[in-house]
Amino acid sequence: MTTEIHPAAHEEAVVHLPDGYSIRSMETGDYPEVGLICAAVYPGETPYTEAELADHHAVFPEGQFVVEHEPSGRVAGVHFTLRLDLAHFHLDDDWETLTEHDTFADHDPGGHTLYTADMMTHPRHQHHGIARALTEAARGLARGRGLWRMVGGSRLSGYHEWVGRLSPDEYVDRVSRGEMVDPVLTAHLHDGWQAVAPIFGYLPRDEESAGWSAVIQWLNDACPPPPGFDVSRLSRRSNAS
Ligand SMILES: CC(C)(COP(=O)(O)OP(=O)(O)OC[C@H]1O[C@@H](n2cnc3c(N)ncnc32)[C@H](O)[C@@H]1OP(=O)(O)O)[C@@H](O)C(=O)NCCC(=O)NCCS
Image (cartoon, rainbow, N blue to C red; front, side, top):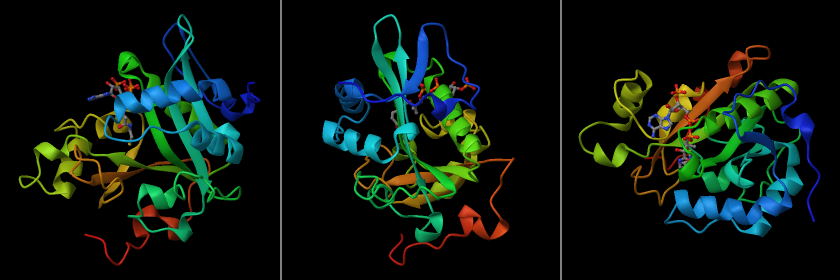
């Protein structure tokens, strides 16, 4: 059985993809492939289960994007989003909190922020502009729904090589200025996101990043957040490092 496709999700988007790839909403039949991508890009983690992916889909179907490699019919990349009211969160809340333990039960249909819970491109398809297209599609959704912004947590996956030599702030600044390359943050910056601030413990078991991530955002020029809702002004958890 396949689930309903939601063409409206990216109807507002201008999505650029190389020949042989197309973008659509996630379907039930994609779940095993998504698990395989997850296992390939996060070898130390338990891949998403079909039940978890079904939860994402049930909560916010138009926010779950898939890029398909047409010649093989395989999934090349995915992007999971939900809407949040960030006033209920801290700047440095972890992934488990922001996704309500991967249930997306905290999805708020009235939330002004489209939160990126995950974006993955299968290693075989990386560097083909898949993440760019997945970002463009989500931006289209945000524009179409009149949302203020997109927000995510970008792993600083190259930071383990710099621990003790550069502070997380210096690392994010230098990557943001293009003086250094981080395999994940650089991709997001090239795809139109801005770094807001480094945070510790977003993905606490992520050894590549030594536990550090950067809050990233994209602001919707047509519907920007009021000044009082600047993400960088969110409070931090009291036990933050
Ligand atoms: C991050 C990730 C999603 C990028 O996917 P991708 O489809 O290869 O990215 P794209 O091909 O769309 O590249 C987008 C831009 O980033 C750049 N880029 C991509 N990977 C890069 C890398 N490793 N180092 C430097 N730049 C990179 C590309 O050059 C491109 O910029 P350009 O168009 O200006 O040349 C992918 O590497 C991935 O799945 N990583 C593992 C999972 C992960 O950590 N996800 C992010 C969770 S926060």
